[in-house]
Length: 64
Image (cartoon, rainbow, N blue to C red; front, side, top):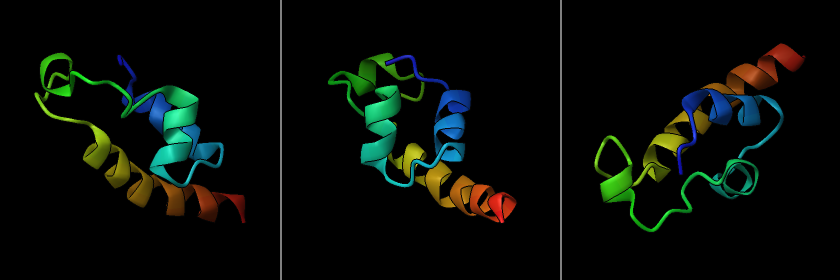
């Protein structure tokens, strides 16, 4: 879907905390040809979840 890591991080910084929220905002994890179009050759949903797990606590801490 040509979604960049930067776009996903920005979405997390704006409050997205689930894959569904990231999907709605960016279109990540919505393609049906992940193995062909993703440079890693696999679906990006696991990568997106890892980014949520890592960046969401940081974004929340900065808001305090």
